[in-house]
Length: 106
Image 1 (tube, helix red, strand yellow):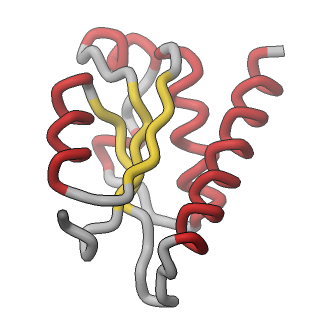
Image 2 (cartoon, rainbow, N blue to C red):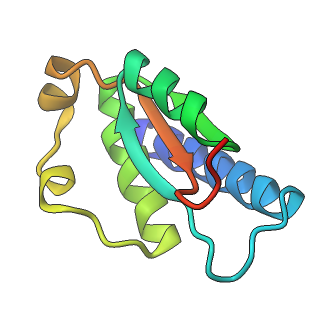
């Protein structure tokens, strides 16, 4: 059941990313930078970049969502991100999956 919920949330998140990219006229070379963030990191990213798309999730869902989103976006995951599991996410207080474009600063 958790697996299906994580997949559903990842699909909704990807749908939001695609809609936002169309709405803001992303070019073919513009890609989303996706990462996990704490409350403070999310606020800092939102102040620096526009648009941003974020989703709050429980640690057990966040790792799964992040993996599925990165897989669908076909982006390479860093070694640190690959080793994140539920306990490490909870311990580091990561609560958000956030996407932004490095080329679109405020």
